[in-house]
Length: 155
Image (tube, rainbow, N blue to C red; front, side):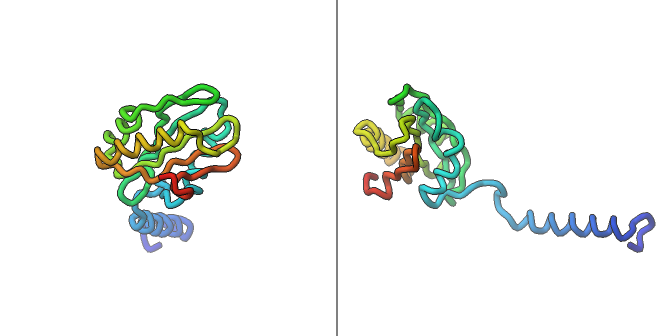
């Protein structure tokens, strides 16, 4: 406040800006959600795909700290199926240098139990991921609730 033109109000604003800058400097990657459970995946994607009328298959791309670095839609299918090829799933993961992925898709019917095709796709993608060195952490199905293949021992 000893500087000409800086009164009490301006001094408060300057001090608040400096404090904000200090705090921001201590936070790594502000705004990047961290995935530590299927509930986190549900929170990230529910508003985007859970209530759509077509199956949407999404790959949640994660860095080594399980922070989300992207979640591209890989495939949009029909009312009851989505075609998913490993090349299309892992292309964005490789480009983003992802350490891991969480596979996710919606069931327009609302029923979250995995189909035989869901299990087969998960098995195939997990096999490919092992070869290229990207870990598949889970496959989450969204609908009226969610189903985690990892939690149910299917991954």
